[in-house]
Amino acid sequence: MSFVALPPEADLEPTPENEPTITNDGFFPDIDPLAVRAAQRVPSSITAARLRAAILGAMMTARIDLVAFAASAQAAGHARLQDMPGPQLDGISIRVLAYSRAIGLYAKAELIERHRDFDTTNAGANQASELEGSIGELRRDAQHALRDLKGIGRTIVDLI
Image 1 (cartoon, rainbow, N blue to C red):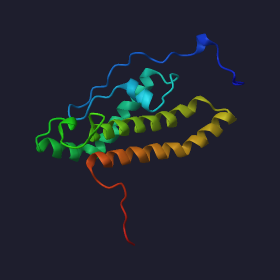
Image 2 (cartoon, rainbow, N blue to C red):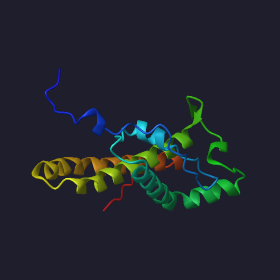
Image 3 (cartoon, helix red, strand yellow):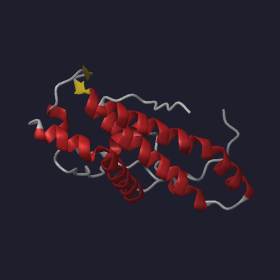
């Protein structure tokens, strides 16, 4: 039983059944928007076009950190990220899992940050301030995933 009013069934947007895969640069794996939507719990109120734009932005952000890594791997004879030797989980390279995770996390952070402009009521402002911390956490986790992909530590400490 729920006391939360829901919009009429006709006003609810169905979860997209088919969103085309986003083709990557050949080294990094292509990204399936439906997989990102499911893994990051992106609601159906986010259109396929907005999700696609957020994923493309996430891919560009990750690319900045991974250009040297990709060049080094290709120079070592690995045409694709999934061709690099290393451990696997559930039959998938840990590096591919880390890349996909980073993309999903960056995309979710952007969607939360940009979605706030839809509601300017006090309730919307309160919800936005509650989500502020999660945006930073999503970006931190994305950075951790990229560092895991590159095989480097997550923390940098300098002595003063």
